[in-house]
Image (cartoon, rainbow, N blue to C red):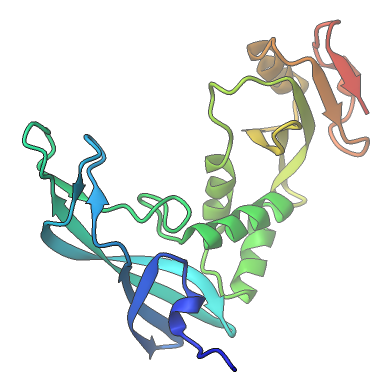
Length: 231
């Protein structure tokens, strides 16, 4: 038996579609959170007492070559914990659905991040435009920087390579954590002094790997003798 198609299956899990429209080539989906209760971020007390509502507008993955905009009804709840200092709090949709203060859904932000990482600023923005993803080259670069690791994370093995802020014009250096497979830092240029300064700030790094076609003269970096250079 065929499963009935629902518009809710096209938007992030945890949201319920209330209505959908199309305006000037943009699919507008009005939705709300499926949960009836939310927990206070300060005391973790659950509450279902709604104080007020407002609309939060975020971009989502395009559908059939058409831009998609989510208009999420966000609720303000009254904290029922008497001793809690926060009387009213705004519901959060979750980092895996819509990150706090983000103008994009988490899944769209992942695509933006990968585009920026693979292509740099302007080339990625040009491809994103063809994919109906409205982002600028500056937004792409910010997305890559924002997903850098937490500063307190310890490093053991890192990879160093070139990264294009603007292809064929401006390059920087990308440093990746090889163990956790994520970006550590985007350095503003490819200068030896810049990379040496970063390594000096992280004496715990034992292994440094670099692409043969990437950052040149790696052996000139001021790396302690106990570190291993893998090429």
